[in-house]
Length: 181
Image (cartoon, rainbow, N blue to C red):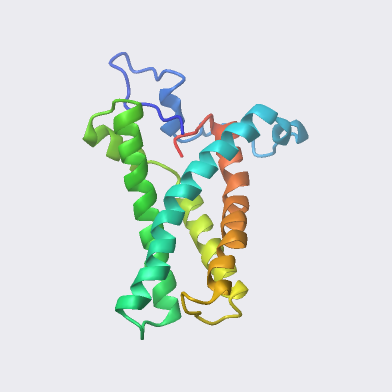
């Protein structure tokens, strides 16, 4: 993920990199030309950003879906899914904070602010779709960890979570020049 500093410079004009976290100008056109959706470099970058987000979300989601029922076997499935979604978003933000600290050499506060500035809508969509696909792949029931269907359900869930977030991430990158995801 390519993240930029979202603070304004002293002279008041943002650099191209800093424009990533600003809302679109009010005069932005409402309709998109067909060529908008045909940028191969933007699709590749959006796919890379989405993959990194998927990894971060999957770590927390799978951990919660696997470990919480071991500690709390009677947890309601809806509650478990909510906990898994929250855990996935949290792990994604924490992982991104560490990556920004190490790779970009951001201080901890700036890394956390930037990570929190990622697209929450994209992460929530990814998490909800992953959990719904996982649940439906298991036949609408919670399976035990020793059941191979439990583990086999994660493949399609991860693919569908990726596909759910990818168009939005591409849109944000192309429309707003934003890859602060």
